[in-house]
Length: 138
Image (cartoon, rainbow, N blue to C red; front, top):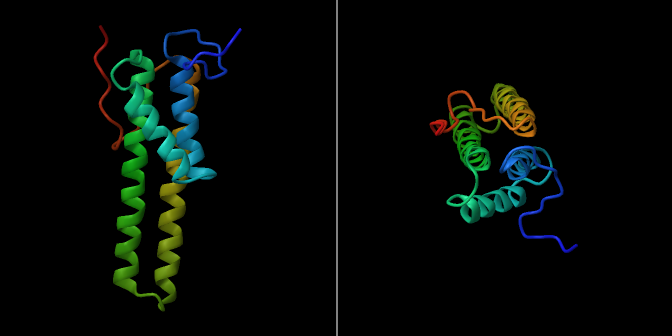
């Protein structure tokens, strides 16, 4: 049997569950393995499926894409502020920068793992503070 365009190799229990799982997996790949490349794939999926995906998939795609943008913006802007404020040659700049990056990055990874668990269970979930609002249930 030929594979269809929406077959991601995961058996769905709820409509859109496979796409939701893929979105959260790509979020984690973006953080841990292939930054940038995984985000481009994730953003392409969001642009392709944002209007016609089931609500579960749409929420996880939207969340993974927007949190990737927010996370990247936070890491780059605050890290730039730390570098600007402390300079490249002050050792405490590097202590603060590494500590900040480790805390923010680790938090995003842990929340992404929790979002993946929720997607695998067919449930919606919102990242604290930077996650988009949940869509109302019909």
